[in-house]
Image 1 (spheres, rainbow, N blue to C red):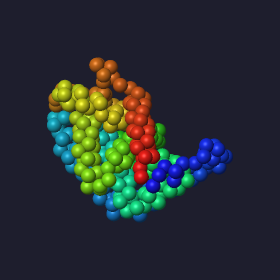
Image 2 (cartoon, rainbow, N blue to C red; image 1 turned 135 degrees about the vertical axis):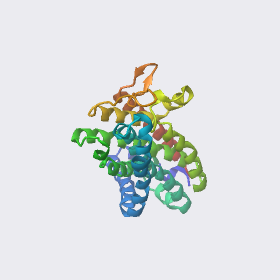
Image 3 (cartoon, rainbow, N blue to C red; image 1 turned 30 degrees about the vertical axis):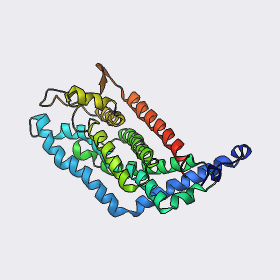
Image 4 (cartoon, one colour; image 1 turned 45 degrees about the vertical axis):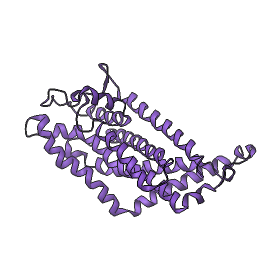
Length: 290
């Protein structure tokens, strides 16, 4: 297959109906991801099991190490944003797996003959995956009251927006890997090696201030760190910050650069920039896919 299958003359690319055609193509790919999500109820239940167990079983146990008492509310609230990201992780990275499967089955080749930009198809797929991931994370978000997070419309709207952005970052990361890999087994191996450290080095379980210097340095270059921290600071804006844990480090201590606390707005911008750059890199590689 050559690039001519999707390339159009310059005049056609600026025709009045060109943008509408790109929009329709992208929205169709987005709807395909949503249909797959809605039809897989068993898969949704299974993928939600791990983050819920992590929050309500492991979280309660770990909370005693931080509080030094029987109350688990403080650490549970601290853990909650990370669990939201964990809940969104599986459906987000599954987009990359679907790209590899579509290539092996020949469906991707059929998509690429459409008279639209290949980047449009990839963007629609990534946005669909991010939407699915955010919807799944929203199921966990609905249990926020069980860990002491107040039910407020403005708080939930902010958390959903931040969760959608984090989901997009993870979806695009999976796409970056998928467009460079031909075999599904290789994809899963590469993704596990990359995403598992990213999730656990995002400040999900422990405050960055309590980490050793080498671990904190890795955490500060991890884009998921800023997604988790933005949601954590959003929650603390509506919830009193708890006392320091048993280690002496404040549990809700925000991510800082040389003693300067990174504001949540800047954290959101950093995640958005990472997503945009990764999507541009994936789209460029995807446009050369044969």
